[in-house]
Length: 239
Image (tube, rainbow, N blue to C red):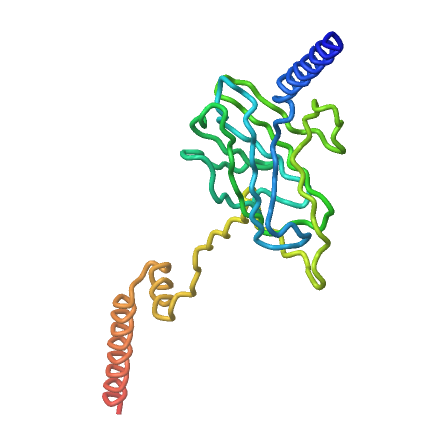
């Protein structure tokens, strides 16, 4: 009886040790990035998304998260809310990057953004690259159903409720990459000169000023007057 009891005890200890080993070896693989929202509904506006990147390293802290936005959400529609101390937000063509000083080793990195409007979809997947201070990168980019073996790198996904009745897509945000048409350069004004200016220009073009023309006119009058005077005098003398 005692022999059987000892055998059962050894088997129990072996089972417990095996389970502990599995948990220890499988622990890092279950770490991942999660995304959640209070109002996870299609076409909902100004929705705050919270991302939690779980630490998977015992030697280095998380320093950067790069998030690829799903179809229907443009980088211009994302506004940074908050994150780890000292981290900065930078928009990219396909999403955004948030990075800064390494968080404490073993601690998760959490940040939140506000989305102008969620697209009309059933689920949104946010592919995420998680970088550590030692250069290691965890790629949470797989789409579809989890593999179930604890070794998948599924992208964080957010399930959406159906859109509210009457909800409509808002107009797209202006893209920062769009270039504005330059304002046309104003042409030089070509106003018509005043009559006086025209006369002045005409006189100048003819090479004679107005004073010269007045002098010529006076001389003509003197000559004509003199001719008349002498003609009358001659007529009187003949009589």
